[in-house]
Length: 219
Image (cartoon, rainbow, N blue to C red):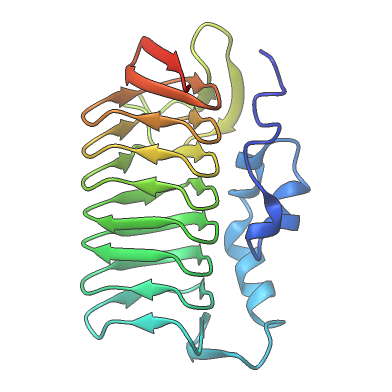
């Protein structure tokens, strides 16, 4: 497999975890130790962050609805909005200006700054790049049906060694309503997917995914 598939997919300056993720050969390598990393990072955050309960740090400008749940460890950054009935299970970083909406569940994932997951989304064992957006009902599927380790790619495969891996979604990507990102999916920077698409494999940057095998270059 072409190991440059992750080159340029993420602007690491747009996440408090950017340098951590950048230190791995592949972005998904950061997910295994994310829990410990968040606990360590939380203890170093400036006074603008309040530890609202053990292991959960929220910036003073962030908004958290009273019906939202945030499990430890988690960091919610400047200006983020956690809306009613959002469920952050833990091991999650919600970047600056992010929106986590109604019935959205996040687990062991990093949302770069400006990410929007506003309606009925599941984000598990995934990294969503700067200002990427999941339409209503779009989810990351993070476990294969046979429970074997997840590989990235279809014909050429990059073995990850991870039993749980959702998606790596590039900066500015737009994922349509009710899309399913199958385990190990990689979406290139500025790429869009039509609603109701089942996504699997690696999709190049600056593309429009009309269906799994109908991909056109963005003009």
